[in-house]
Image (tube, rainbow, N blue to C red; front, side, top):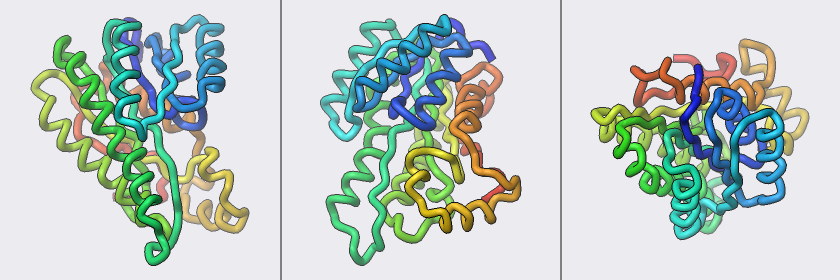
Length: 247
């Protein structure tokens, strides 16, 4: 699954799934533009990739800010000359029961998780269309498929990513550009670290494989979807949940 000569842009790359995706894509030979709000963590990631013989550059960006997205993507294309692979990974949670959820928390989650993906796609699609090759990979969630109490903002933001994935796949398929999504289940990240032990144990009981997933489990699927081996897959949601949701 070589990605030699390809350029990938990964949002939310400072930790968790995005961090693992950047390492996995770089390991496959891609030059990786890593993006997130935390510049110090991005620089550490770039150093880790370059120390292993890969190519990477940091582009600090808050995906909730449209102007930062435009500026950042332009800088990436100016630096690397193109974007072949886009991984829309950046995401946040602002959990609350729907009857108590503040509009600001709804807007923040929608802006970061869903609107940013649309904006990033819009900014890099010209580069992909020009070369008639591209891979767009959106990181959704099992809770965008099955819902979750307390996540009346997060669940629809992730469900929206699935709809966005399918719509874009139909728009650009004739130009040899694929658009797919990965739907992680219970993955060990900063987002799940804050859960109580009771909640973690209850979640684990729902996983037939009997273990919590790792960011690397997700990154391996992202690398596959970015490769030529996945050239006839588009508009698909690849579940990475240990069997927690089937069908």
